[in-house]
Length: 138
Image (cartoon, helix red, strand yellow):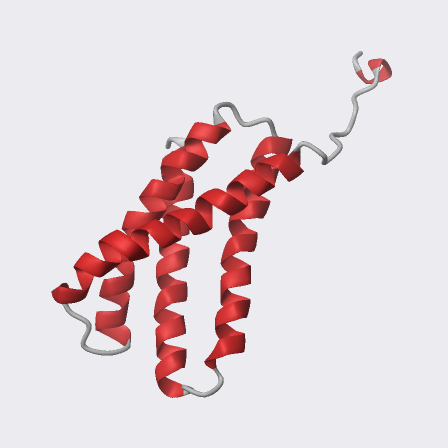
């Protein structure tokens, strides 16, 4: 499976689950959702940043393009899956909400993948790789 498709699909699923859980929590606890949303947003940003840093550390080829395409796939995928998840588990969200999710929601999700991934790729250069010694080659 291509690297961008794997990253995009995994992050789309993760963002859709987070959106569904965030909406459900907001419905059940409307006065205490701010801290929960901040922690959830930090976790989503952290996943993309750490994954991109590991990609850089592992020297994955063409990782910049892979993360760009993954952000696009994650944006649109999370939009569709988020609407479906909210319709099934939270409230009566319908097809009318799909337009807003595919435009503004998808763009926001794509940025939540691209910006931390860029920061993670920069940070991944600073992670020291273990050096092989010449004695190890026998």
